[in-house]
Amino acid sequence: MVPFNTPHWITKHNLEATLPEELSKDHLSHIRKGLERYQVKNPRASIVIPAYNEERFLLKTLSSLSELKLPDQIPTELLVVNDASKDRTSDILAEMGVNELLLPFNMRPKGARQKGLEAAKGDFILQADADTLYPSDWGISYVQQLKDSSNAVAYGSHSFVSEYGRSRLSFCLHESLGKVLYAIRRRKRAYINVHGFNSAFRRKDGLEHGSYEHTPTGSEDGHMALMLMKIGHLKYVSGKDSRAWTSDRRLHADGGLKWAFAKRIKKEGSRLAEYLSP
Image 1: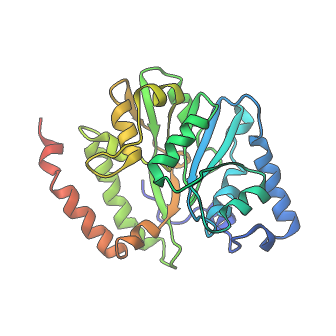
Image 2: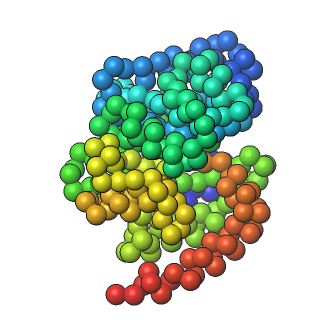
């Protein structure tokens, strides 16, 4: 069910501060201590995040990841692939003690994700983004699903966190439509449902069978899912613990919520016959 209210934990991590020095000493120490749990030699899981000029939201994402329960259950590393950022992304990662893979030039999302996949050490790759907040139980159910060899990908849903002062209610219609489309697309185009900010797969499968190219819909993370669905199921995991809360800047880039909604209706309406055909 689409949430009509913003969960309390979102407020905790949706910081006004964008740089570590803007936090109180105690708050900074709390987040850094939580992130220390990702400094492990032999991880079983890897959270991989591509980042390009993410100083505006990165600290919020790290705050939410600092309270994940996943690293308390299995050894987990956190790897941020800095895609040649020109802002203070690198400074934030260094100050917070987060492992950084700095690329020599901008490789765009598909290149950054591929480099992250190759550099990761865990058996399970959890795809995340630098402008997204994650609930404390995020990732646990994905690892559990991927222990079943018949599942190639585990993924969840998402809601929006406003950077532009919109009320939660204004997003509900857009997200409700998304929920319907998720269900319809699972029949034939389930790979479109898989987002790089909220999904997971086995690293070995990604290296041997997948790639971050682009599908006809233009998504590098969707292409990885498209390749992996040839060897197993794309497992949708429902529930609040698999719902990521991402920035609404994607909607803003489409001209705002109204235009993003219209664009979605037009694009998915043209595919409806294919979705529903035998």
